[in-house]
Image (cartoon, rainbow, N blue to C red):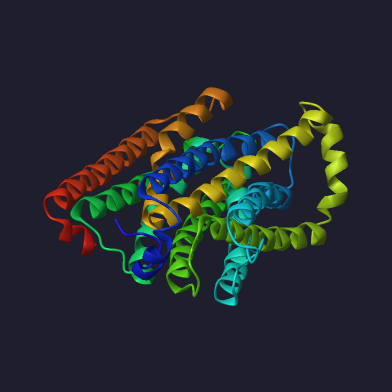
Length: 356
């Protein structure tokens, strides 16, 4: 499995973070990614189901929680100042990292809008299955951008996930909510697919930014990158809200919200927090491992999101969803079986790990 940093950068960071610490950090980021990946779509759908209509509002909330990250960043800064040199900076991004993050932020804002539009039109269980195709896009772009190597098991996983998405695309008519027109439903379907493809490009692009960075990559720097990406993504969506006059609509939506005005604002806040867990977890997994692993984890959590959507929103679960879910699970098992075999080979022949 490739790492998200070059060998030179790994050597520079080796004295700053031990292997056990990096494994612990990987687990922590996997947990954050899992919380955000499952909780984000559910709370976002709850907003639309109970009376929310602002697609730009919902898309903005996906990154508007970036100020939360200033807390651990400041704590890290104070810790380094106390135990390191006085030259420690709170914000240390160099132009070679900052400007790519600005571009990635704008692309993330566009991706947020596409995803929010899809969630506003589709059941969570359907949108989650479509998002599973992100793995195929991530794998393809990882191959092109960071020269990710693939085993037969990885290729099999990507193929099965893609077939699962095709099954959904051919049998979507029975899944359309009663109040939704066919045109709006298909708009949601293809918007979600577009969001999946775009984020499949963003993940390897972040890994490429790590590789091209002209400074050591630490976890503090990862948080700085996420703040910049989220800030510009939020700015992009804020412009959309201004054009659409969504700021004026928020008080009216709150008053008419089915669960009450206070609950409306609580849902918006919790939504932004869940999505911040998702984005920081995703970029953290890339830092500790690779963009492909980040995509695999997102796709692996599909059954959890599916089950929660059926439980909380009483969504339909037709045969085609069951088939797509089975194909997805088969793909996940194939990938992780391949990784286990790869780890065993590395133990017997360390040169195997250095070639991947």
